[in-house]
Image 1 (tube, rainbow, N blue to C red):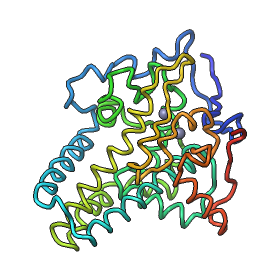
Image 2: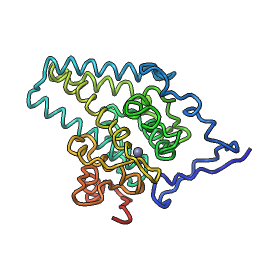
Image 3: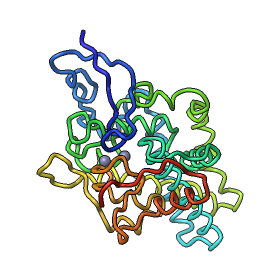
Image 4: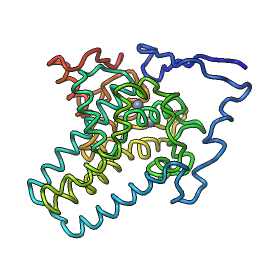
Length: 310
Ligand SMILES: [Zn+2]
Ligand SMILES: [Zn+2]
């Protein structure tokens, strides 16, 4: 048995923040053949067949879509207070996912004040992004295996819908112990247990503003947030690279991405995964970066990594 020590250079460019995740058995000559994706080809399953243990994910996805369609039929034009509250929650969720989950926890490109960090984790979960351990595990897996047969959300497997939505409920569950053991213990573990209560709160709390609030702050917001995040896995990996990197910047997604502005510069991100800033030029609007910049200015974010060359 040969052992290798996995170095997570995906977390940063040139190993600015290189982490060691213990010793992982390597079976020569072809370790990649051992893994589940290549063995099981889940994208060949029927569209609505969830992976074992992910039935609840499919139920959740169907439920919010059904509720959103009913809500849009009954209340196609919400009142200003309801629409405003929906936008605020969606934006908080976007900062939670993009700034906290993606840039801080998954890639370690900045360090957040603990109170801010956990508040953003709450808003990310309230926006349907799941617990930090599962999100980060999937995401590190994606970067480490990008554009290979083990890339969990590659459109090369099953086309647009696999990359966009199907992998969420048809791929094997996230292996948090392997990819982000530091988030699968201690106070981070509490968030894993809190997933169901938080998502129920996310769906139903809008009732405080009546039925219109129920549908708009709940299912309609969650469906919007879901697809806008899913575009990062689908549309921004529809490049046709000569260099083995399918990621691409999709400028027009920016204005639509209220919940994740900046994530649309995905080619930038794959090429400089160690940077907290995704928009490299002044015209590449990156709301997540502006938020980080502001947090840093008031001492609530530190060790902020900039792109080395622009
Ligand atoms: Zn990333
Ligand atoms: Zn990617």
